[in-house]
Length: 192
Image 1: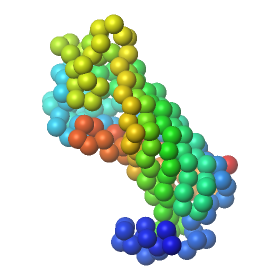
Image 2: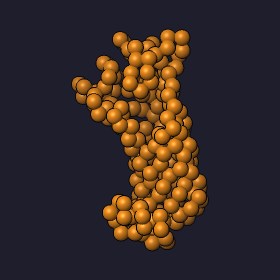
Image 3: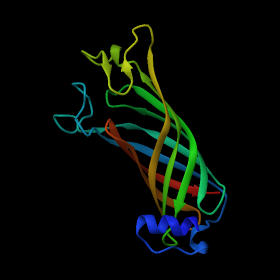
Image 4: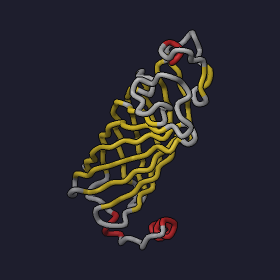
């Protein structure tokens, strides 16, 4: 029933249950935390790895690891940790936990949508970005702290998976943090 509903929502023919069920209940992703897009351009000047003058596109260097536990053929629980250099090239990271809905239109292709509480942190930009006092996501910087943090109840992502065989896949994901930032990552997935 859920598979049919997701298929109708996405405008594609329902996949058979045999195509959806992978070989195991556990999986892990290792992803390169890659490219960030700022829909309104960067709020601050001088992002070291910006790819254009207005800092719409900025490279980030880091890694993300996801661990998934399959609950049903269409539902997983995911835990995520990431450590990376953010737009200002300072250390940042996140921790997240939440459900993922999965839809697999073919044997080799799967899509996941997830949402859940997410804790984000970074080194305090006040000490690293010239002229910085606040931004629209982390708010006003506290001069007594080396770090800034934010908590979201609704953090999430969209992910596509292409199965190479029963154990290995290529995965690409997008964190649609509109209107602040859209972040992408690319990596490998292993089913256990």
